[in-house]
Length: 289
Image (cartoon, rainbow, N blue to C red; front, side, top):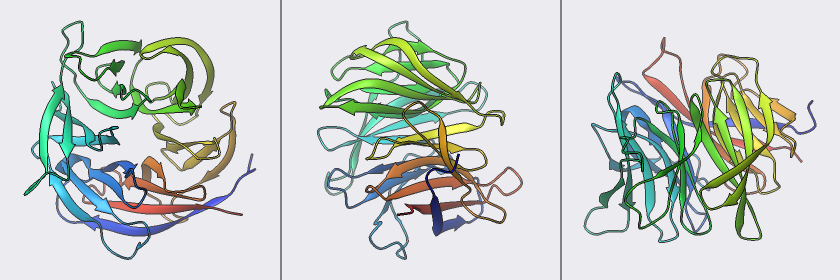
């Protein structure tokens, strides 16, 4: 299986009282910064991968909401997945202008589907060439598509626990959708017929560990990297595993999501188990030559 090798360096950790889960890494449009969240604290951080010894800086807080996935829109603003409540969660997507002065400005974009359902747990998202947003509702059991300017989102897939999400773009057009289905520990690939319209399932890779898969990221060379409960996996075009590595050799944390910086390097967010909820760590992965 080990056709590709990669390793990790821990570059930052948060170890203060409170429940922590690092999530949602995304590369800025100019490629110089990575933004990620401390989900349970509702905090967004900015990190300069060219200076890995410099600690990330907090740039915004959505507390008391939890803040999960992030992506940049064509207008340069961030779109963020928010939710609140453990038993009956309610969620929404917010648009955040980090450049607004004197402080960043946020506004709600959407909170309901065309069926009138309130989102429960918006988790991760991907933006297509038209600025449309595919996003997962982990505890709502749907993958939604939201076209900018609409007031509601349309369900395009119904799954058990859709988690991470990624788009395959070819010649400037989204041609397939990847979804990490945590309920069945599977990574699924679907054809995109047109924006928001999903076709046949193309491929499916199931992992052995229960509720294993989380964030997804396509490398610039077309490999799909998967944050799995025990390690980070690399999958080929058929979703067959061709590489695997834990974040640390001893007592590794659980990877949660992935963001590529360039062809060789990528950022991985993580968290610790319920036995160690006060700690979460940020890593940089490097693909071997």
